[in-house]
Length: 327
Image 1 (cartoon, rainbow, N blue to C red):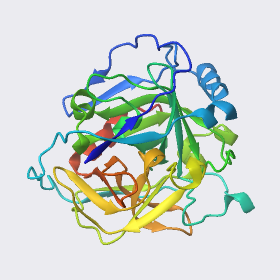
Image 2: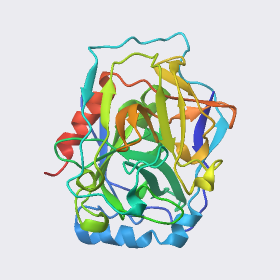
Image 3: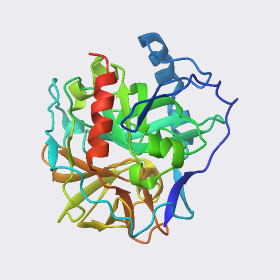
Image 4: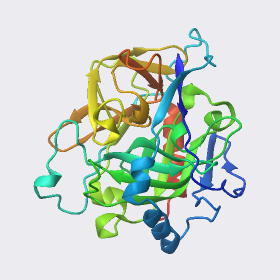
């Protein structure tokens, strides 16, 4: 098995040392989102600076994630069973009308899914995939833990921006900048693939100055639904398909992959990291139920990859991020 490991392009000075992260007793960790020079992105003015930083030229230079072999950290025999009853969060519709030819939904172009851009601690420009998820405060974007933090011994990423339904340089809904980043502590401390999950809390932004879920809607989410799902749809921006410039998809059943992880057939690699695995994806409205995210694969392009199994851990992270979100 291999991890999605970042190939860096150094474009500037290292980030300033950020303030300590905050960890709760349930295994969740958060940090205020920051600029490359370490300033907290806690107001609209700084968020606008981050959005301005991500010019089309810088986005084009962002490096997708690479696939390199590493030693597995979890035993294939350490199966952890669901630790509670199956649960769901329902999809949430936007609060604005979505119209126009450019807004039409296609199977591989959900408005809830987009590209993520961020800078690394050495100043590199990088990208991942992510998607919105519905909640009462309507600010959450779900991705992989390794798309918000480097993992054990590493740091949080900076200048974190989400571009829903990005396509070949077009940003039909504008951009949204992160206010806070959250991840499971097991990823932060130990790079545990079992808990390679992250949720970003977003500032208002986009083309209308609204919350991200008010603008594009949000997927539902499910946990404790078992390892074997008959049909899952994965969406993301892999560089091996479409050069990372358009959403791609694959569909497959899922099965247990060892540890607390699930596996599905898919030939997406590289920048698909953090893209959602959706149950009951509806290509008429672009919504489904997030049931995992792209975490890592084995040999690039061989046709399968793994994601963390969504159990009470993801519900805990979701509740934690929602509680931290501004109203």
